[in-house]
Length: 442
Image (cartoon, rainbow, N blue to C red; front, side, top):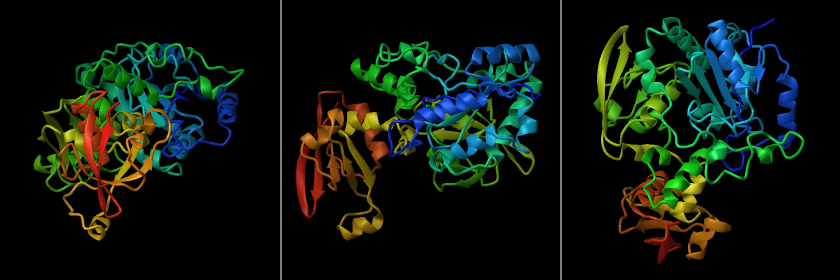
């Protein structure tokens, strides 16, 4: 019999926005089938992560926790590879203790802090609760057919190496640990409390009874907004990808540099293609998600120390991050961004015009040109429509600025500078006509 493998799978990640999170036709059936298939599987402890921690303490093995949205099509490929017998992964997985949790309603937020917009996330712990690292892939998120597991396997192997050196290396892991949180579980949060219970409604509406993971950050942003407080930048731009500092990392390695954007913070720090980033901000890395966690906790202005291995030799680089570096983070595909679109854009979905389309319309390359791909029609998402904005309008000036910027950057700037109840002047190009409008902040 195989030893139990703890993989925590959340049915609460990114289900509701079909544009960015397509789901299976029978969502309830998918959840029920998952339970029927795995509840008595010898590899899995099902729906009980506390038992997983107990088993990890008793066995001395590390604890592997994969949070997975069952009905969501995103990440279906890698999830299947992890679940099914896999000649490459199985020998490594057998070295972990484990659980598959499909309910995030009562998830302990003081332990489980991850990228809530992903449909497949892994967290690896010591039995005493010390976190070794995270894994989560936007490549798998964007392509449900992507099955590559080389990076996942390397993450597991790196975590096993950390576990072998524990607890002598415990001090180096402090930066990877979860931060204090004002809410113990999602069902304790203001916009969620009272609408959901701690357990799924197994005999009724299972999917409707599940807290979607993206609702956690939605709730936190709403708390700040309702208090007339500035939303922290790491809630507007959560878990910034390496690309936000100019790094493209290879999917099949822990943190190997595939390319460096010219003129970026990473380029100025002297990082090169082929470098392996061993640690960032003093934190030993086991994955690209670990890089994003380090960036997630980095101040708006900072100097990050990176230890890189080049040609087998380690060296230290300092990555200087100037004020505004988070604006380079693309949040357009995140489910959590929809609520921010209501807050800052009145329900508009915007995308930058290409240089070719700009030229066709007589617009400059460095000029603001955000195309209204969609205009919401219901609730808070209808505010822009009520203010006169129309589909296919092109915003060419906002708040007195016509400088080129992405939708992601604009959302961050507006949330930073304006509170609900205020308005922002905007000029759109409608055909060949300039139209002045007022965008309401919510």
